[in-house]
Amino acid sequence: MNYTEMTKEIEKLKKEKDAIILAHYYMKPEVQDVADYIGDSLGLARTAAKTDKQTIVFCGVDFMAETAKILMPDRNVLIPYSRAGCFLADMIIPEELIEYKQEHPGVPVVSYINTTAQIKALSDIICTSSNAVDVVKSLHAKEVIFGPDKNLAQYVADRLPEVTFHIWEGYCQVHERITTQSILELKKKYPTAAIAVHPECTPQVTRIADFVGSTTKIVDFVKNSDKKIFVIGTEIGIAHQIRKKAPGKRIVFPKATPLCYNMKTITLPRVLAALKKNQFEVSVDKNVAAKAKVVIERMLAASR
Ligand code: SF4
Image (cartoon, rainbow, N blue to C red):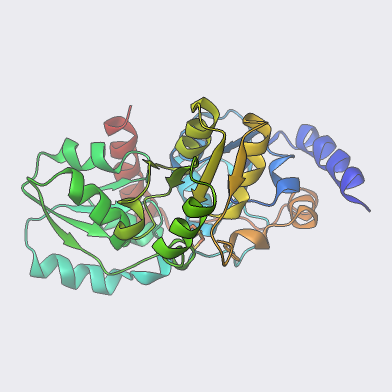
């Protein structure tokens, strides 16, 4: 079966199974093209929380599908590849966070959405790259524990100097590999270009950027800017929607193309198999899910 035939079959199965396909910007182009909604983690969580469809096929990594299941426990949530994990989410485990909380008694924990359900359940609130500053502000706290992404933490800390941040030492290997040197080389080659990067990039990179934001915000920035050329500091999958939504704008990526292998494990044949065979069902322990739901909803309320 070729991609055109697979796409037709997927569209047919979506109707038969009352399914919606949600996809992150880092998905392969052909997977994005069968999605009903494409967005960043915040948009995906919001869309999952209000769908009336019985089945949610989540084209992203496991913590994203888990978040959808926590928000909609009565729905059938499927992830097309059961081992699509996230390197960053693996950088913090419950035992370590419990110990860290004991070392900082009474300090609220703000966890990035890129965490397991257990880490969410141990947190006071979660955030995404899109709302992290607003979420921390909403706590009115003097100190916060922020993890697991140290780069996002530093980006937020730079904007809230009145708050003391206890920063977890985690990072996303895809964004960490984007260097200032590679960005500046492109800026030299294209002097009129605007630099737009994700806050998971290092502080050295975010500090030289013209724009820092989530994937959705980067797409909007390119679309609405008067500039014609952009140096993009995030995963290459974003190129597909930029080309669709901002045709005529030129985008270039740093050397050593930022590529998330975990995201790329979601392929079109696996999306088709997910719908055909009802695989792989996402489940979250009930007690963990109940606690995690409270902190996810707290975030949705803080970023309304
Ligand atoms: S790009 Fe980084 S943070 Fe996003 S899923 Fe891949 S490893 Fe995780």
